[in-house]
Image (tube, rainbow, N blue to C red; front, side, top):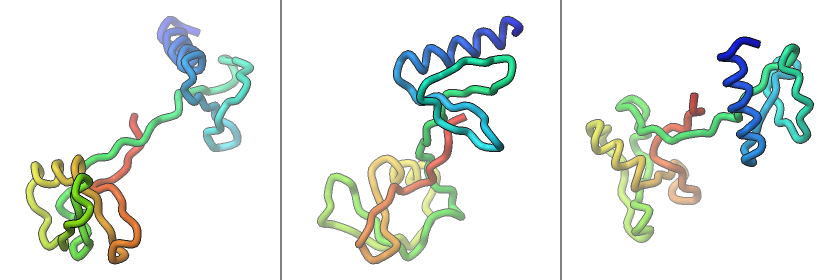
Length: 115
């Protein structure tokens, strides 16, 4: 291992010690490690990425869906425009939407794995 690889290994092992989920590459997929047997020469490890909500782009806004503010669940309205970047950012932070007439509510944005 070179110095950079060693630094990355330390980050992964420290994350495990801190209680974060750590994964290893196993048969074409990432698998959670429960009891690590560190084998850095033969196995790839990573800290499990966490999902992060990003605002919709104009093309992703589900026009015709219901939307409501998280703080005021009694008031809701129909999404009828894509709005601008600032409004979509506010939507992702303060609102949720429903595409099934209000039976289930979801965040206003797209969940992406953090890199």
